[in-house]
Image 1 (cartoon, rainbow, N blue to C red):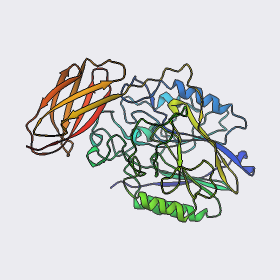
Image 2: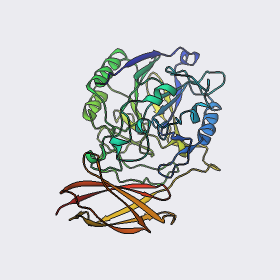
Image 3: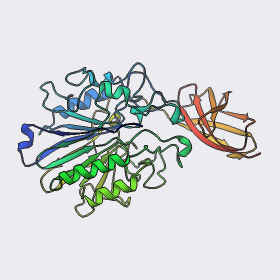
Image 4: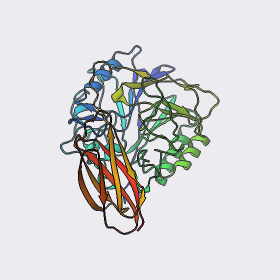
Length: 407
């Protein structure tokens, strides 16, 4: 059984001698050392280099940076990708770094604090999820920070950094395209309660990768978020102890929970209703910040009486070649006797071949086939049941569909 470690860190900085301070929130950095047509990414950290420099030149300077997960596009890749980011931090290479060791400035006055996301557990981008990820943050711990939850405290606030887990298996998902994190353990929930009780008179902020409340918001450029259909407030959230966590936030008067994961901007209340960034009567505000590889960030200001946050801000996009590619798939009929058609539709007309692999609910591959063109028929002889089709094109884009075999 995995042991959960917890650390409390006290910030000692001249910044915190003032009555208030500000910090930057980013999420979904997705640095990559290889081109990826599967997920959008920051190839070679060129966007990260830009916005880190911008944060370093903000006035007033932020006290620190908070990065909530998906630091790497494939966290447990071999060779590792994290150096693509750490090359722009100070010091630029630290074996098994501690919390707050990395800074964004050469003077090492502005630390950057991390918490992991689902991509940090990945060993490859090849689904289904249970076969492509580790339960441990091997490379993350070696290059970014300890595999722990921790608290950063000062005279007026406490910030809890939580691990919201790896993807749950695709076959346990109502919507495989909006994956839930495995969530929080009972031990993590007990630790949150203890830390909040110890800091009951302070402003309280919790940061994690997966949003405890979900709702369609906006993209980084302010346009409506339509990349995925969010079925309900629990979609893409915490598979374990979600309701417990929401109750903890409510009963302990947590000011704000910062998250990412969906690559969008939105703020909700505990019931999943959209609210303004700085609603003073809405209870805990559940804030999502869009992907850092799209240049999204927010500035949070903490005072003894309130925690305020800016609307989504954007930087470092113009002139940057963001690599992205999407794939739509259609399987019909979805309930069949072992014969069905598969069609793919891509944004740019790149597909010449696509490859299918079919998995059962145990994650075992039962069939595979290569199809020329954008449409083909598949025949498989398998027992009745639910199966998941993983589709990959010759350009690298991937998609997944569910099919029910009923002879």
